[in-house]
Structure formats: C-alpha cells, structure tokens
Length: 430
Image 1 (tube, rainbow, N blue to C red):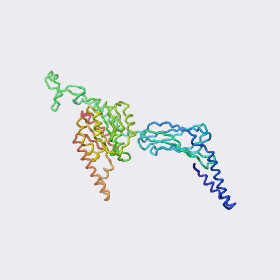
Image 2: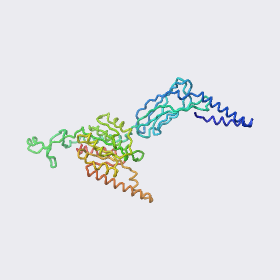
Image 3: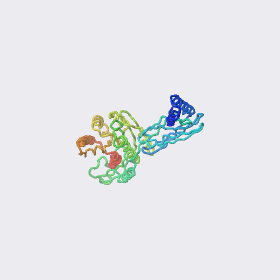
Image 4: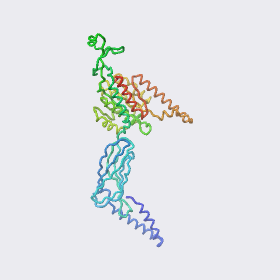
C-alpha cells in the first residue's frame, strides 16, 4: 500500500470542523472518516497481480547507441488499473522514460517502450517491474513488484573501425608490390630471379642455374592462410581504468581492428580470453561472420581480480597452434606481473611463433611526469618517472626475447597494432 499526497491534505482539512466543533470528538471523527475513505479507495483500486507482462527481447546494441525495449502489459483482472509503472532496468542500462502513466481497463493491453542508452558494455539486466495502482479517489494505491526478466547485450563500440579504410589501402599496397622472398613449408612459388649477395643458398634453383649458366634463386609468395591468435588478458591488471573505461575495453578495440584487417588479408583469426581459466573462445570462424562472433564473445567479458596464470595460458596456446602463427598478447606492461608470470615462460612461445605484446598505457601517468606545481605534484612526477622506467625495462627485456612490443594509449593502440601487423606482413615474417 502507498498513500498519495491527497491523503495528508485531506487530514489537514480536519482543521475546519475542529474550529466549529472544538474538542477531541470532532478531531477523532474526522480522522476516522479519512481512514474509511482511504480503505474504500484502496479496496476499489485495481490489483497489480492481475497484470500479465510480456517482454520483447531488444536487439544487441553497441556501447553508446540507443535501443528500444518494449513491454506489453495486459490487464487480466476485473478492475481498471490506473496509476504508474516503472520498468526497473539497471542504472548502467541508461533507461529514460522508465516511469510511465498506466490506465488499463480490464481485458485490454498496452505496449510501453523504454529507450535505453547503455553506459557500460556487457549484459544489462532487468528483473522486475514496479506497479502502483491508484484508487478512484486518488488517496491510496496498491503497490507491487511483478517479475519481468529481460536483458540487452551491449557490444564493444569498435570505435577504431574508422582506421580500417587506411589500413586496407596499405594492405593492398603490400599485396601489389613485388613478391617477398619467403621460405618455408606451404609457401607458394612466385618466380625466378638472379642471385644477389645475402640470398639464402637454400632457395637456389639448380636446374634453372644450369640452364642459364648463372645462379638463380626462387622467390615465394607469402601464404595467405596464416594463423593469427589474439589473446585477451582478463586478469586484474586489465581491470585498471584508463580514462572512462577499463584497459580491457581498449584492448578489445585494438583486437577488433586487427581481426578485421587480418581477415581481409586472408589470414585465419582466432580469439582466446583467459586469466586462470578460459573466459571466451572464438575458433574456426571466417569471413563476414568473424567480427559478429568476436563482439558477441567479448561483450560479457569483465576483468577478474586474479593473477593471470601465464603457464596455463602458454600451454593452452601451444595446444591450439600446431604450426607457426602470429600470437598477439593483449596484456598490460605491468613489471611485477610480467616478471613473475609471462617472462619465465615466454621462450616457449617465441621459439615456435611470432609474438607481439600490445599494451594500453595511461596518458594521465605521462602527464604526471611534468608536474612541478607543488610538493605533491613533484612526488607524483617522481612516481610516474619510476613507473615509466620500469615499463621501459620490461619492454627491453621483451624485445631481447624476440617479442615485438606495441605500447600506446587507448586511442593510438589500435592503429599502431595494425601498423605492426602490416610491417610484419611486408617483411615476410607472416
């Protein structure tokens, strides 16, 4: 039960009879009348329990975009339900207009639409609907919660897709140039040319050399069906916020741009999200179905506050990759976490695969290094410089182990990772 604003006003009007008939009898009589009117009003109000709710599942939406969530309300009771209805979505669903007036005669239905503009990625949920049914006098209302579960899946925004046209143009330039010399199992023969100093003697074509009376080598086209494995680190280090979003979201954006570019290049792209266990996996999906599969797999991911099990991660990668591939580790360059976890087992990957570590840096930390306004800013600058030195030392160690490192802020990481992929492509390392 709920009382409306009319009830205290009606009680206040009891001052008038008390002025004409002073005493407790008049006051108590007026209060009794108010109680009776409230009881009658409550008894005549339609019951929220007589409402049947049907929710139309809204389509998936990218973060920052709007979607409409429809709710069909049917009055199966015998009395008119007049009042308010609140569709109780999570605050992060960004619901607007969730409080709606309701006037529903018996046997009729209404379709109510709530506009959602989610502010967080993942599954945004709603469990119940609140209904307040007013009586005919407007003094009291029946109030209840009705189950109406629903959800809307909020996909990663993929803001870096604006870089895709320029990267595809660069890819076409690479494919259109003179074929690169690549030697190895499964490569495609392209043409013959004269030997120059520095060529691999194993690429010499002895029959052609005998015919021409000069040393001739074979050139090879890079294979197009290469494997690219994207590893999303979902451990505690990915939960740190950079700007308005966690590092994990920026890593997803970079992974999506690289996946879109690599699949256009004819490479096979797989995704593995893992910390101590596998959180998401996309394997064997090609062509136009790849990006939808990736965003669907990434959407519900959240960083878990645990340390990454890099021994298990490396073992899982090696189990899934039987041939040489490009392995992109999207993980923060946190010195302590990498020194104890990744670095001791990294050679197990670099000995068989081309490895790239892509990390999201925090521009706020870079800005702190310039702080000199007061003692607090100076101490902050010293701490930021120390963090930068540790980061540089970790990067140098990774490079020494044969790893390509891409370290950039959230806006720059996707295009720089794509450029590194194109550079490896142009160098014939893929």
